[in-house]
Length: 249
Image 1 (cartoon, helix red, strand yellow):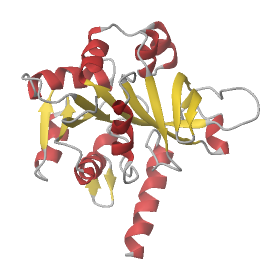
Image 2 (tube, one colour):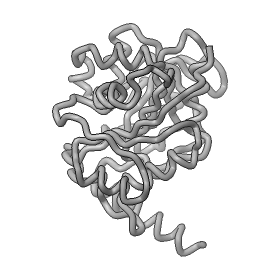
Image 3 (tube, helix red, strand yellow):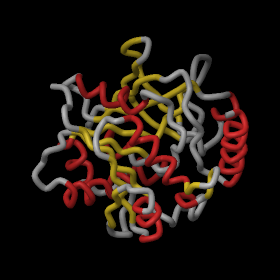
Image 4 (tube, one colour):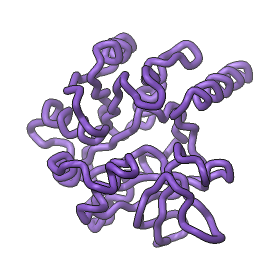
């Protein structure tokens, strides 16, 4: 049955392991988290809320008219933070789908959130996500997560595994995972009730908890995706791209 009342929740924390404070990093005069929030609002798929453990992040969103909810600071991953936030935001259960838009995706392509949500039209799918072709330099980059899957249609995969390694072996396309998850509400509640799984801890990838628990994840394939921000080099490149885009206007 199609999801009819989605909500978008953006998990954000200041203590990022690889790039501390990146949620508030300035990009073209605005904090990165504001760019992500703005892009989510423009998608118009449902209400947008930032879930954070940092009052500074909450204030940055509230200063532009957005809504933020404060959560605990001990969550293992962003989807665990969503589980807590949803309890506070929607105790009545009005929202039957929850989109986790990760806070390091400030320039997600138009239609991306809709593509992830559309996968939930298939009643067999617990979580919809996104992937795009990996560039050659990303195949061996552990910061670029690869999705290993089986093709269901020209623009859709069923995810079998996610890894920071170059996979699968041999000739053929490699798919880079894009940080968006469209959860059925029941799937998110189940996910958040589970402890971190062995492969999740080993790869440092939350989506593996879902796969190890037997949940089905399908991915819509994009031609390309906006850059994510995992390192200082990523941030510098993103700032340069934003400046070029502004100069072109």
